[in-house]
Length: 117
Length: 120
Length: 249
Image 1 (cartoon, one colour):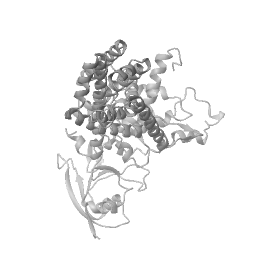
Image 2: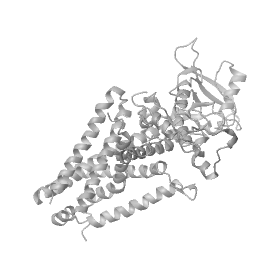
Image 3: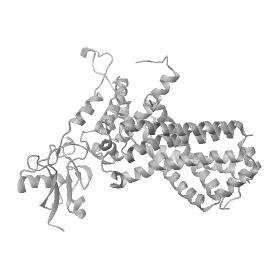
Image 4: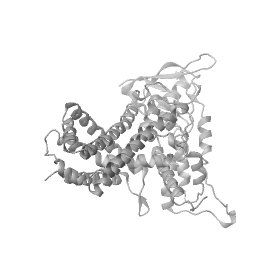
């Protein structure tokens, strides 16, 4: 089923890999460590909210979530195959679960980013 | 193939380690989505989210996750020059030049993101 | 300095044993020797029944590939002195191939995969010889030259866990050679090869472990060749979706 769109799924994997490599470390460092540990002053609720509702930020956040989710789906799928030596018959459900989860996350992200504000 | 084939060689182990960084990529995408939802649900929901980020469990998780994402970034920038080759004046641009440009881009993009997030 | 060095060599004589066993030989330690020289000493002086393939002794024919201390190695290209600290040196047949005898493996599966990617120049219309040769500039040669250095030694197949996990996987060398012809300015067969390789058992089984490139004695970079192939496949996909009226060759 995924055969015909495999090159496209690989493209999503690649784009997500690039976006997460470029953007995730600084996000985790600031939001996940520097702000909670008090190394730096965190932005307050109102300023962050006004930043997030800006259309360009919404688009940025959608790209930030959508591509990396498919990066996870594609890479995780093959890691499961390689780690657990999954044979042909059992591969399809794993692929469907991975890409399905990424698609679900993408839909929720799109809905959240469209309705915020 | 033995079940633990990836423990038999350093290279194979490093490969599995690299592939498993995708789990953190997925989790951080979801965490970001949860943060946006908390932001959408008002100041109280957001304060609760921020408090949860301060718990030792999430601090530890984020520390491991940052290390994983750094591994992902370094291995990714190493792989890109073999995937996208650029030819300039009839010769292939050396891999280290392409990788180097990615590192420069990484620093610039990180600085821009930090500038937006960090209240002056 | 040791005067002799121990080789632990995998033996398999199908008429005598059902599973491979190990046999240890003491050979003189000679700094000028490569691993293959030590094996030839065993064959000539100690045990004429030991069976292995070799021919050119200079890294061109690609027949003397074996596992040396667990790593796929061209035995004519590595000095004995590199292994003196890790005695005994363990020599086994290339893994992921059926063993015929001792260090000799059955390479039929590889030969089938190799011919499946049509590693030759494909032309839509072959021009008559009287019209002359297909000319190529040094820059056009440079595009594919790296991938043309492959000597079919199969080390990359033994290095690749995906080959071990998925025996149908077309594998590193065959895909690199397909890429060698795709990138050749005289070739017009990229679409035919893509049809063969755009499968799970073709390029998509590869998860870029990269060990094929590490063990390659000719710096072919098969892992890179497969990455280029995936990129080409993704590009083709976008072209076929966005420009469905485009060239349908």
